[in-house]
Length: 410
Image (cartoon, rainbow, N blue to C red; front, side, top):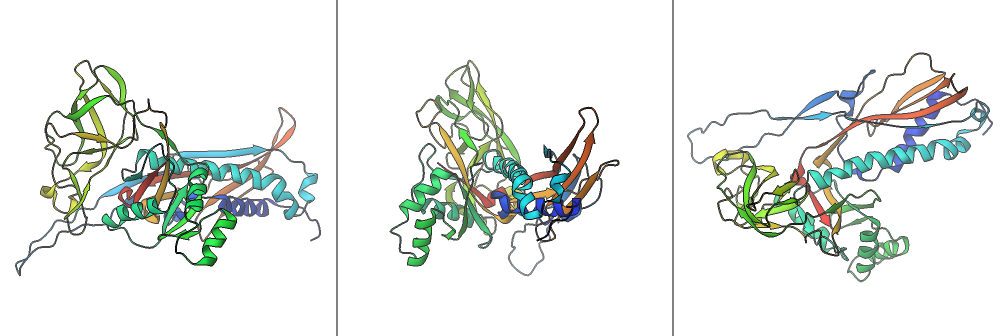
């Protein structure tokens, strides 16, 4: 290919391709809402409302039992603005794109992709309440994927478009542990040679160094519910019998259950036979009486809430509280939040940033397939007498269906 002067459109499109190819977790999420942000001049804080699907109960007999239709929406906000700035000379614009890209664009796009994946994977720790595995112990076989799949199935998650993201250690252990499985010989050989799982147990598998690490709170005592919960939509409970007056007994991201509070299937509204798991949404400290208020998600809805029901009953006074994982004082206190998820569990929105005036070069590239958007500009810094280039992305994450995701603790 003969050398010609590269323009901003070519650079932006190549940057977008490199960015898209470097994504891990983000490849498996819903990006259908990007087009609603595809307008010039989008800014941090822009929001769209996404309508949640309706849920109904089934009635008996010929007489109509009319149900109210209530449109619930959740907000997707563009709250993340990231960029990478670098320098290259005008002479280097005469390189062909095959030379220019690996030198400048690929490293910058990789850094941006890692940041997008990292912020998305943080949702696994803060928003996802389903959890399997053993915190502090690296999984060694695909059984954990089957356990995670069970959780998703119990919440009526569709079978297709499911992914698993593992940290490097978990991937290595599971690939090694699966070498003797009764799977197609060619597939096992491919996994063993590459050290990578591609598809297994109903999931597409990928590895990411950005898997979020979680440390369980120090805990202490024999925690229990102090007062009955009785309000539909409750997201907090007063607890007792913690070790007295200690900071952060529970940490944000801890997973808890209440004795005899079982999850229900969202279609049949029958108990799944598994305790409903809840994720703690704020650090909780105990007072001198060993009491503290725990905030959590999901909100609690019983049969009185009709189609919103997600548990068999409210937590009651003296119900024991169980914490998923050992206290942080134990040796294996740090637990990677590997994640199994359906595409619609998480939504990423990206926006087309405006090209400012008085730049030497500038272009926005949007991928029609994935909806991803990236901006490239180059401008002159008169103070320091240099040309500065930058790649920018504007995006936001939303956990739309947390019940369709499951942490695989390691």
